[in-house]
Image (cartoon, rainbow, N blue to C red; front, side):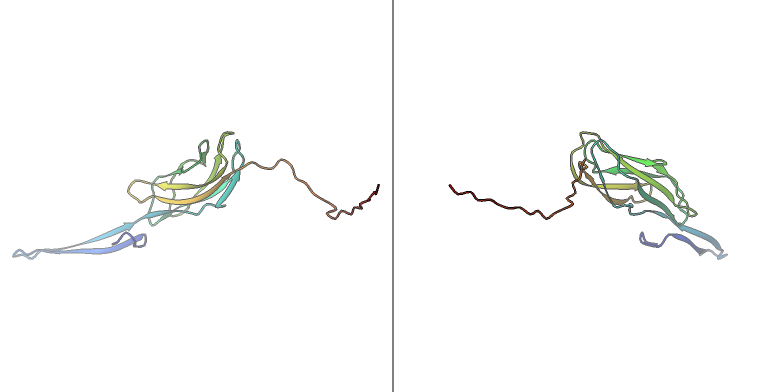
Length: 164
């Protein structure tokens, strides 16, 4: 088996034959379970927020592959100073082959969070497996507090010249 093999159950037999005078043989049935998990692309993949506010909800799925049944811990990194991730229902989930774990993520900011765009790394890890990651684009900016509409974009004017 290789690390790139497909998750699933693999059935095989082990056959052992003795080299002694009696030549005793034994057969033993084994099942090898190749397991893994996945972390979906965040939806939406890009969010904006004003300092001191919280983003709209971001959806993620943690899915089990094969007979995977372990706790997966979620985290965020590369956040701007003053920003924090909040996972719902929790930052640790246990997906199973029967159902993926649906996660909602919100990122909160403080009033002092710097303006700009960051590539936030969302990570999922469990002991004994390689960590999975996805990228989310976070833009911290000031939301406009007004709008202007010009109902008549054409203006007509006249110029009066006065001679002395």
